[in-house]
Amino acid sequence: MRQTLNYRVPVEYVPMKRLVILISGRGSNLEAILEQIRAQGWPIEVAQVISNEPNAAGLAVAQSYGVPGQVLPSKAFVDREAYDLALAQRIEGYQPDLVVLAGFMRILSPSFCQRFAGRLINIHPSLLPAFKGLKTHAQALAAGVVLHGCTVHAVTPELDHGPILAQAVCPVFLNDTVESLATRVLEMEHQLYPNAIAGILSGRFVLENGRWIDQGVSEFGGAFSRWHVHPSL
Ligand code: GRF
Image 1 (tube, protein in one colour):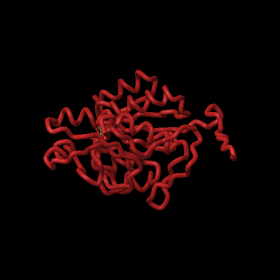
Image 2 (tube, protein in one colour):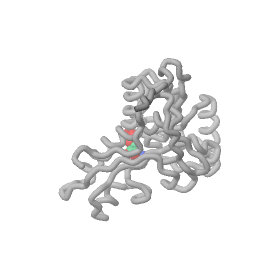
Image 3 (cartoon, protein in one colour):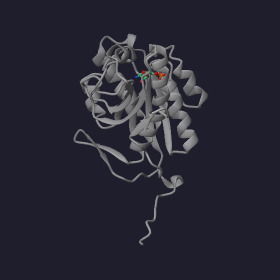
Image 4 (cartoon, protein in one colour):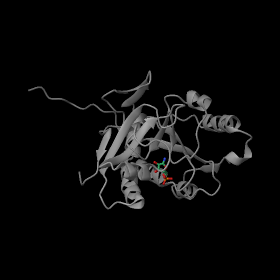
């Protein structure tokens, strides 16, 4: 029988990939990303964390990992276009391979989305296309669904609508509250998002003509799964 050899390039010889992460608040996804980069030894540098909110707790998370953070307050700009232009210029200064929205609570203008097309992703706390927008856990409970979860998708001008890369699924229990369900989904987010980011930066997943393509190989080695399942399922 023919033996299959895995000639992956040792991670220490893979050029560093650069990330910019945008936040507005708590920063638990940011923390999960930074933790996994450290734990897995992925060749990823978080070049900058940018918050539109001066009091975002996530800025302290960045600092605790030695990652530079800054505030670009949205309130200081006359309109969305002006803010997004300033934000885009800041981001470009760090030459990121990928721009990651991690609880960035602003709608981005079409020109911003087009400028970063193919290198702008978001995590949304529902199994898209169900439950777009806000209060997704309340929406899920009101709809009476049995399964819920989160989605990593490319960002396009239409809200919570871009091509889906990865999803994680968890059960909804009959006695769930918004809080208990949110906690369960957030744990899944923390598994899914770092994995999806590394999958993209490693060259395994590429967005082409509005569709994700699986290249089958990853510069980082390792398997990057597009689906994650809660252990109770
Ligand atoms: C997460 O639930 C994420 O899916 C949504 O905003 C929340 C951000 O939480 N887009 P955190 O700031 O990462 O803790």
